[in-house]
Image (tube, rainbow, N blue to C red):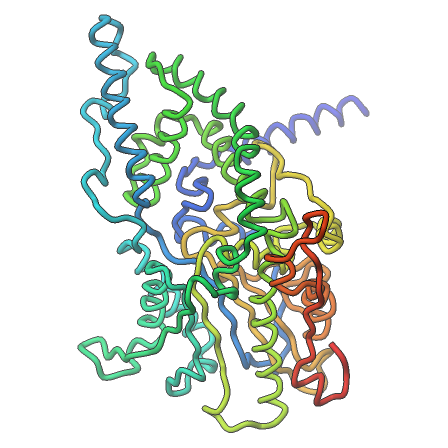
Length: 485
């Protein structure tokens, strides 16, 4: 009898495994941070049962931290693709001259040139990127109609972007969706709105990574080591490609072909050329190498990566405190801010997600708050929480919605975190997406406030380590209620 039970369980497990991997493989969901928003935004939402917002609670403020939409390759990467085309032409010429078999060579390689050949500029927001942000603005207004019912004023709906054109263009596309039909401009009844940008040289809210010398030094020192970690995977797949297609690909060819796959799939919806060279398991491994780099250089790999984002976290928190003060003081409508909307980069969204403790188990969250190093994301096919395609795809975003609740609620104010528009568990709040405001402050915000940006980024001790200095949270509400932060 026990043997029969064991046999049944083994059969059941094999059926489960087959069903788990029998879904069609969509390479567009495995492109790390080069993933299009619409391809990945709903993936994580299926795995978590969100909290119910208590009856009688209503949103009084919204914070948005968003990445720019889908963009074209940068000039540097376009040159890389031109170099790839030149080398592929040379490889194919050698094959013909040596009278080797051409049966295994994919037909698209013959005469291939980069789709971006001849372009003089790069990195701009694409039509698809504009569409992503435009419709995000429409969906947010539809989801929170009471928040966006007031007449527009730049002090009520604050929109900020970095000085990089693709970020400011994303802010404009978003605003056109958010305020569509609210003005008198053109047949779409658009209206003008303000987008505020800080100089790149001093933008410690949205481009803190650019202003932080210690971080730039760390990243420069670690990039060769990260490349070494990725090399065995690249070499393994390079050998497989050489054997499969009978072409003498180099390691650089394989790396460039993976980049081309991401660009073709994300920007052009072409998945049967460069992406077709790789098997699904190889795509998963290449995705993991990208995620590993993201983790080490921009994510949980070192506390400096996200601690330098504390000014942004403080700005988000301060805006909530100000909204509570307006609520408590019965300020007149139109006299206080209802949304603070920010548009930046993956290097902004990833550290901010880390500061919130997203994509961690509770034990990892406690390690992170003690600034202990975390284990790297496990290699495919093992499951991992930290995936670039979920953490920061094009147009990836975090929303923090502040709710005001009736006196009989367990808390007067709640914070809900939405990642890519879906509620997401916060390990610092017992894996709930809905957190009492005081708990959010105590467990998630305050522990990070032991560093000043300048001390963290631009001051070194005798040992070369950043010197900590506290960032205080003495807010208007704290002063009003006579308590310290």
